[in-house]
Length: 264
Image 1 (cartoon, rainbow, N blue to C red):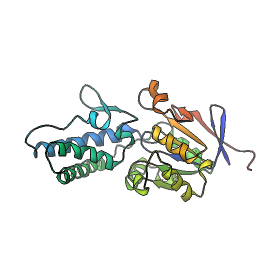
Image 2: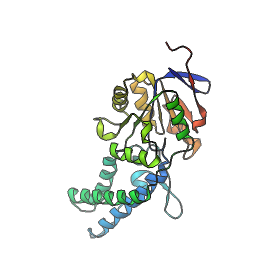
Image 3: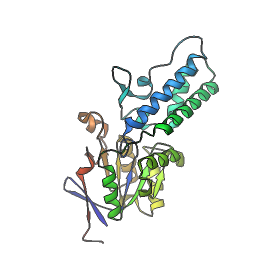
């Protein structure tokens, strides 16, 4: 058994479950670029197929924050981009076309085609960058013999791809995406399934995530500790965004691992 030490508090654990985006991966680097691309393609499709009206700004749709040039620089941790599934995001876009007079099926076709084009752009750029300290901490976990897993609102195959882009896929024994469960975050099903595949019980694992839905998921599953990781965005708001976290950290250097003397 290994002890995870946070602010002098010790939590015996045999595994750690990580959210992916905003926890291991720089959220804006990947999803900001993807969102801008998807929104651009969909806007062009709509403009060529409706007689009048325009779709709402992406900041109103997905909870993004933009600079003076329109580039995405931040996002709401309680918004659709942070907490929603791909299906949720496409449905939000599809509604925009529908309210402007398109049949739902046609608007959804445009949304899916726009996603395909945005995905192709990301394949060329591969803007998946690990957060500072994340890879070192993952390696420490493996050295201590901890079993690691991913629980993400992203689709499983996309999550695997992003981990491969960052060169860390091999460290994770299980990857559970939103498409593998009936109920995604904040319900406990992802944690339950990940623990089952790891051969562990929820109280034997820690959960690290960057949204309050991660914290609610971990708490409802009964994990050893829920750790809110808040490295991006406004630190003043981290307690508000992660109000159900047992512990909130700003960097992986705040976490330490030690082999437990008492293996019982």
